[in-house]
Length: 292
Image (cartoon, rainbow, N blue to C red; front, side, top):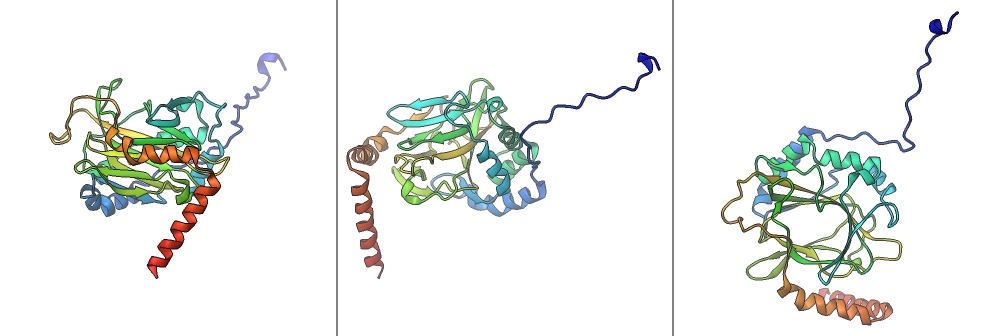
């Protein structure tokens, strides 16, 4: 047998060392969830929003956590200013395969259609670049002052309309702080506080009046952090007049920031943890006594 007649042995394709769990949203399930939450969403105070638990298969999110990068694994964008301390990675190419697959599903037709049905905002456009979105990692001491988000995506030349925040924090306790606070604009008042627990999704309209943040410094144990997967959605115009504003970046609310939160952050810098814990226990005993 000549070399030309020899059977050809195919070269095996390289196998990824990490198995990606297949996952795709069921459009019928998403439609039912959107229908259930739509009315409450559009009438929610202080601005349209909703909180949905257990929307994702937990094993998918656990796989994302298994590959969640450390400080040295990716090139983090670090925001460390008087208004915030957080780590952000928007480049999906640096992230693990399960995270990339989940990010792609957040930009899928099924999920975008779900958001349109939930919010009532038509013609939504996802951002394939995840500008300023992606994964957030908030360490001990990290925080994000109350603010309104940037109004437009300069690269895509689109108006920002919807935020989606997916929390990835097992066993998160209220005393760790990190609750997402939603504030009314007139008067300045905290209306809702949402704990960032595992498999919780928060969806809300993005306007110049949608004030939100998690301004108290994170007080989780060593080795933990506040982990979030975020995605933003846009339209090409169509912003209602009452929501329209001149294009702007992130607007931090100095009135709120200079008030109780700056004082509380300074206090936490100088009060020993054992003293702070003792004070919390006293406050809890007082609340329990009043309840009885």
